[in-house]
Amino acid sequence: MGRKTLLLMIMGVFVAYYIYIPLPENIEEPWKLLCMTTCMKTVIDVILFAELLGINHLLNMATFFVSLQEVPPTSDENVTVMETTFNNIPVRIYVPKRKPERLRRGLFYVHGGGWGLGSAAFFSYDFLSRRTADRLDAVVISANYRLAPKYHFPNHFEDVYNALKWFLHQHVLDKYGVDPERIGISGDSAGGNLVAAATQQLIDDPDVKIKLKTQSLIYPALQTLDTDLPSYRECSHFPTLSRSMTVRMWSEYFTTDRSLEKAMLFNQHVPVESSHLFKFVNWSSLLPEKFKKGHFYNSPTYGSSELAKKYPGFLDVRAAPLLADDNKLRGLPLTYVITCQYDVLRDDGIMYVTRLQNAGVPVIHNHIEDGFHGAFSYYGLKIGYRIENQYMNWLSENL
Ligand SMILES: *[C@@H]1O[C@H](CO)[C@@H](O)[C@H](O)[C@H]1NC(C)=O
Ligand SMILES: *[C@@H]1O[C@H](CO)[C@@H](O)[C@H](O)[C@H]1NC(C)=O
Image 1 (cartoon, protein in one colour):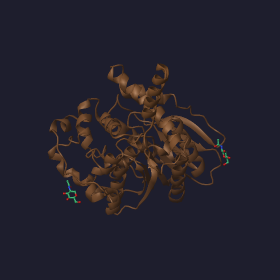
Image 2: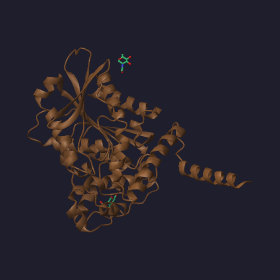
Image 3: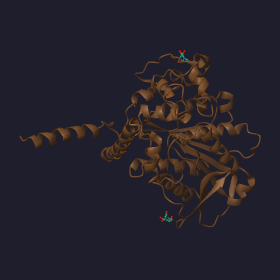
């Protein structure tokens, strides 16, 4: 065997080792998913390496790659697409072209991307908004908001909230022909986080007279307190979202100082003075048996109070909607929650479902057994269409 052949073989083994991530058996189209995630992983690894060399911040470099996948606001044969601002927040608006028979549904959408990436212009969000407008005969508002690392909490929340409040003015609804009785709000991942927080905040806002009819949370992130939930343990290395990336994104929401991330990785970031909050995220009492199987509940371990003093956002209910008490939750509208089995954030969503049920809020839980984080936005895969279809059917019956 020549030296070249040997070298090739070694390289082949190395590449195979890099690409191959064992996926659960029930994942549909595993090779297609592996190809997509390998591309993503390669980009992320290159970026992380560049960050290590001090070239630029991870999110600044990732933003460049994401922006390559943005599309302009182009109308098509069925939907008029335009861009404007609501309360100085840039939004994309999708209005069906067909003649309205009556006032239309309104849907306010908040995109995901870990509080640091994404926009209404990202091709899969643009595509989703068009299809939603067309299928539901709805006016869709797809909101942008300021992102990390340049901006931190509560800027993201405030942008979403201010744009939403603007939309909920009667004269704005009149302008777009929206029925004030049929307005919903939806978001995925970090967008689901912002939607859950904004929907809670609306309950006691004296300025807002119009009520939301539905909220839809698609694999939302809902709590910062416990990074050792069963889903964090089981899906720690799942290729579409790892535990370390989740913790990084969470901490970047509050600060670029990496000390918060470090403490969160050890699950030692909450100060003992906040111990009373753990009951709101106690997976031992809030998860159904099926999701607790094989896991032991460890009592919380506490960290220094310095971090919480410097970055109080991570204990703020507007960042972690699971921290709301039952009295608050009782005022929430009809809620639809999608969770995926292979998702670090799975248990956030499931615990919220339990908490809403306990508070008497009507909630529909759609758990996708072969789903994974991000599946809703993977349009090349059958699962993306399947989840979108279920979500649209639900909206079409309930909004
Ligand atoms: C517009 O609607 C028609 C009829 O539902 C459909 O066949 C067509 O694909 C739609 N066009 C776009 C661009 O979505
Ligand atoms: C969590 O719930 C379990 C019961 O399921 C209980 O034993 C434990 O004390 C609770 N821990 C906290 C911090 O609330």
